[in-house]
Image 1 (cartoon, rainbow, N blue to C red):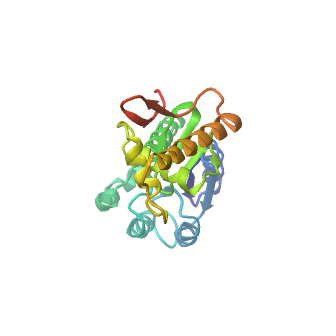
Image 2 (cartoon, rainbow, N blue to C red):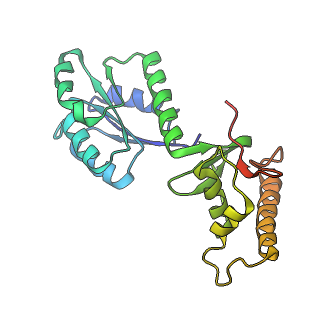
Image 3 (cartoon, rainbow, N blue to C red):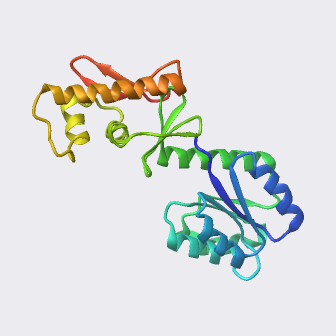
Length: 234
């Protein structure tokens, strides 16, 4: 799983400090604010993956803040913290696509379960979990090994992106080469051009096995079928 960031907004200092310590176990970056105005500025600066908002905060309420965030971002996951007395206010939140709302005081077990679920949803949507500890960010076309970004050549990136587009199907050498070499001045004309593809894949495999997961390569080649991504076995 790839590390994620969270914006947490709570005006109660004691609650905020306790929650922040918990959130640091789940997110690589915890951005904290004590009011809606500051929180909106921090959201625009950091663009977090998750927003955890107390419904009753100064300047902008949690609902008002969530509405402004949602207008800018359809993908961010929003969790609302609310007291029993505030539940009627949540009727206003129908169009905000909240991931969840938690009743304060929030129980540790309920919080843990919610955070695990939201991380799983984000990673499933944005990242493809590959075999041997690798993952692929579909939006940015970045390869990771155990959260470490791997430097790829332009053609290596195109190759992996092609396979990850439909990870359960095989791609022939022709399909892959057509994509990789499409922008080259000299387009594919003979078998020697396909040898270039084999060399690209061979160099990629060697690089990854030497520097990262020595146990295996996340791309398989089946005779008569082609190349396919190996996904993480859950």
